[in-house]
Image (cartoon, rainbow, N blue to C red; front, top):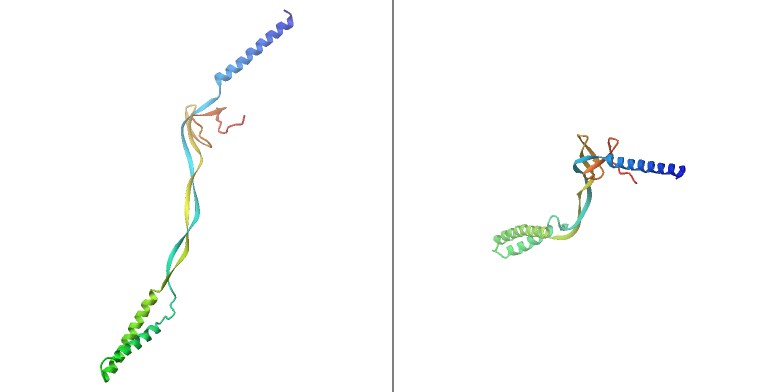
Length: 178
């Protein structure tokens, strides 16, 4: 064997041995992890107001045209006077006519008032009010972990699972793109 080949073989053997040693070191020492003890989701309540409208039937009283009930009073007085005039004779007839007019006027006033109070109509109105919807938004996770015998807590964007990677004694909280 010539000398060049011997040197090449020795250098190759050294390279393979060094590569194996580096790979074995990485497997033995490997990445370090912190043990996860508890994971608690952290939520934020979001309140969203919105307007809700619905149509409802409303009964209203019609506007009164004869507010003082003059027509009912007058018609009642005339009818009452005519009826009173049919009773008795002489002075009694005059008293009965006046009494019939007064009583008829009072009765006509009350009848017209009752009729006006019952004169209603129904319409539809839209009624609106504000209601608040609530929903929960996940904002992260409070993670309790143990590293080197010490218990600590950190907030993370995702659930880390059973362990958190550690590099140079620090938690690796952000995943790196590979």
